[in-house]
Length: 70
Image (cartoon, rainbow, N blue to C red):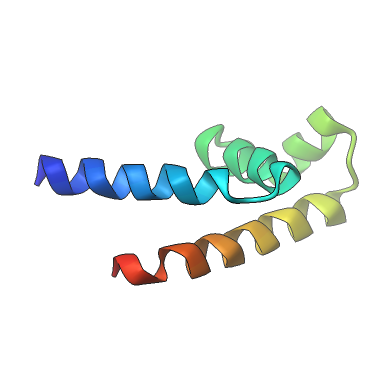
């Protein structure tokens, strides 16, 4: 089980690296940094709509990258 989890984590890290840098930064802040969309907006100075779009596009890309993992 531990080996499977490590392999999944490795695949996820590789998928994150393939995201556009602006998408990766926002997705990491939201999901790894556990920040709200508003907190990310305040921290980065980007409009809330931009934050939401980058998260949505980043997650779509991650889903596509990770679809073979299932």
